[in-house]
Length: 318
Image (cartoon, rainbow, N blue to C red):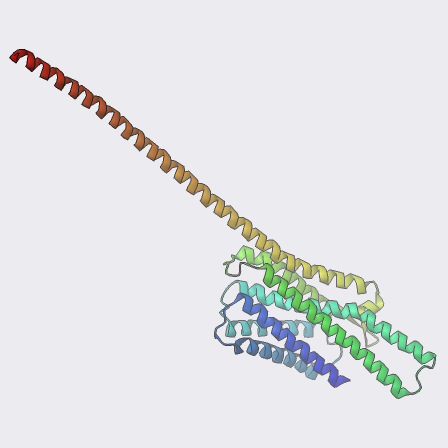
């Protein structure tokens, strides 16, 4: 059972690595034009994440370790993301800060939301099998253990599937909504994008710190004491996730509006310049028409004078 859960965790971590290379590769240019670039990012991220988890389990054990573990895990995870982005992509851009924080926030929100939502399912399955035991439906302890392990494994698989689905769908929506990927963002725009992601990340850290409480040195989940939190906490997490997603969409709408406004100003200036040019040409044409009219009058006068001169000359010699 433990080995199967371990393999499932490794599969989820590898899928997170795949999502990372898809997310970064959609915004940043790869340093090496090779199909192995994304694979290296996915594998190294999975290895780093798995190594962090194993390190903390070995040093601190598998029990409750307080806020220090949460803070250190977050810091190391962010460091891994930054190193991978800088090593495998041309990431010396402000957008990289948003990409790193947003990926970590979406990954953590997906994990905590799925775990809390499916905690009810796990408790319900355990309650069902307890009733079956009370009614004597299981003929042997082996059958009971096999049923319990199988049901818990099914719940674990479903939980990992929900985490993977939330992560991939959220990242794909960010990639699709952020259409102006070559847009050079400014610091104020970066803060607009970064604040929802940073807030979601800190909410996850807070949950990691307060989720497990100690009662007589026995770890106990916070929502076991306050069942309403099984609804409130996922709602907060999902709202935080939506704020990240729709913050990106709102930012893109603002970029489009500013771009359209700039295009209208340019077009207006071009129309104004064209009108001034047309007015200037009209003045030139009017001046030319005036000159033509004056030249016609002058030629007519010259012609008339010439005729009179000829008549006068004919009278003298006649």
